Image (cartoon, rainbow, N blue to C red; front, side):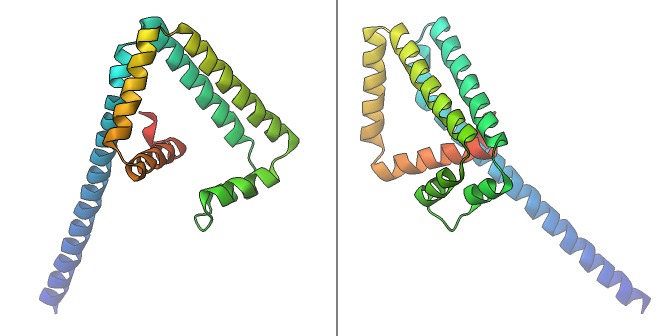
Length: 172
């Protein structure tokens, strides 16, 4: 009887150890995939970023920080009902957007309008700082991306980027 308990205990310990190892491997794989994705994403823009002056790079980083701050502010203003709409995977992205827009308060609508106006102003501010050569380099890079990726791959890449930003995974 005692040996049966020892064998059962050993079997349980083995199963727990195996499960724990599998969970760690999955976590490591997810982390590696995330780093690979981030590296790929950074590599896409690396050539363009290198062609910018330090002032332009600082401007872009400052603008990114402002955009993220604005998004966080808007997200903090959402009610539980609105967050539930955003997290509802049964709806398409367009249906989620339409449902969310229908529930926004005047203040939230004002935040969105201000955010959009700020983005447009930032785009214009950046456009005013780039030279014709930089503009041509950016266009060439975008054109080469279009040739390398068909529409599906590009859409999936963008979806993944947005998903990582929303979950906070792409913030490193």
